Every structure is written in C-alpha cells, then in structure tokens.
Length: 166
Length: 145
Image 1 (cartoon, one colour):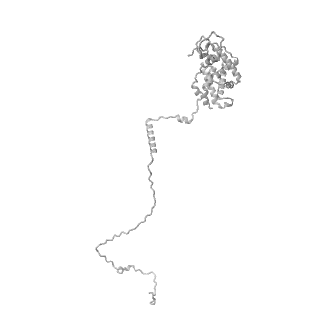
Image 2: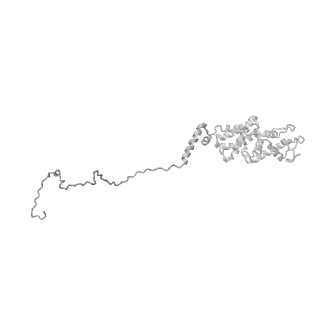
Image 3: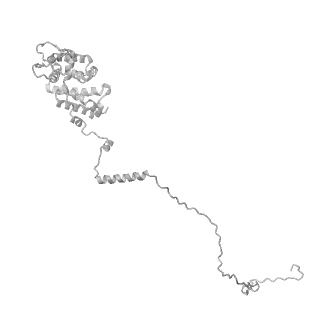
C-alpha cells in the first residue's frame, strides 16, 4: 500500500484517535502529520509481518501522544495516574462534553485502550499489538476504564424506555 | 436533542453496559483539517499523463474558429473518396509504313504520248572506257556462238 493510499484510508482514524487521546485538535493534527510523514519518508520501516498498516500507524500515533503527554506531565509514571474527575450534574447538560471530559480523565493506558476499542473499532488483538502487551492486559484496562466511566457518567443516564430509565 | 436526566441522588450508582455504550458515541471527533494532506504531501509528484490531461491553453475565439474550420476541411477531405487516377502508360508500338510515290507529272487525257523506242533513247554518255581490256577470241566452229 502506498503512503498516499494509506493516508486516504486512515488519516481520519488516526486523527480521531490522536484527538481523543490528547483532547487538543492542534496536537492531534501535529501527531497525525508526523505519523504519516514517518511513513512517507521511510516506507520500508513498515514491516507487514508485524501487523497491518493500520496497526503500524496507530502505534506511531500512540507513541507520539504518549511522548507529548509525558512532556506535559514531566516524569510522572503514566500507570500511576489516577485523576479524580467530578462532573457536576447540576451543570449544563452537554453529554458530548461530559463524555469527552470523562474519557480524557482516564489514565492514559486505559484511555488508549478504550478509545481504540470503542471509537476506532480496533480488535483486542490489534490493540495488544499497538500498545505492545497481551490481550489479557488490554481486556483488564478496558474493564477498568468502562467501570470508571460508568461511575463518572451516571449523572447522564438517558431518560426513557429505550435505554432503561430509573 | 436528546434529553438526559441529572441524577445527583444516586451517587453510588453506575451505568449499565448498554447505557454506557449508548452514551459513548455522543463524543464526536472533528473532521481532519484539509491542510493536513498538503502538509504530509507538500510536493506530491503528479504523473505526466495527469498533468497532460489537466493542462489547458487559452485560445482566442477567432483562432479557435479558424482551427475548427481547418480541421473540418481536413476531415472532409479525408472522408470523401479520391477521384480515380488517370494512368498514362507509354508503350512503343511498331507500325508498318507504306511509302507511296507521289507522281506530279501532268497527264493530258486527250493527248497521245509518243514514247520513243529504247534504241532512240540511247545515250552515248553512258559508255565508259574499260579499266582492263580482256580480249576473247571467238571461233567460228564454236556452235555455241
């Protein structure tokens, strides 16, 4: 697959992934650009034996986002980051912003697993390849991320019979 | 706009998986900026045929009309069948020629022409001396003479 074709097919997915990881459109744009520049400058670095081009691109984007995150957080270990998020249920009723805030508040490793699985439709096996771990760890991170989100977003439970009202 | 209810009275509650799955897609990602492609492929090489295909030139209207007429004439000329060609072949043919002598002598119808006898037409100028004399004796007894 040529870099141009890979860009046409995956640039939106990579950008969305980077945007949801960082929460900043400008940073996401930089990460996406850098991600595809790596592919354009040195296409031979991509080894099909190690995974699909999609996995390769998400891996680059993930590493760039983590680097950017570490630069912001200095030397704080990403595994130990457990931010406490309080969403005021009496605030404006903006579910999109609430979900964005809740997801962004997750620890980076849980966040990336959740974003890849829930938003980008990446399989567990591919997530394991992207983050460089095993499927069990990915499942564990996903479980913890969803459990945390269930608590954070409880204030935005949808009213009606469709999704089960209180 | 979907309606959501704020629940601050159930602090220890959690969303179900179905509820969480229905809420998560509410967070939409913005569309990729258009400038991203130009940033990644700043000088993307364009194939020559695509350049050729998209290249255009400005031609003044009269010139375009003239070119169209010329092209129409050329196509018309090629379209009509050419007239049959006249082939001139040069062959050498021998023709027998009969020579006729033209007599320009005046002949009178009523005039009697007296042709002189051959003896009277003797001309002494025809006599010429011999170059070598060879006398021959003819005997009387020779019956052949």
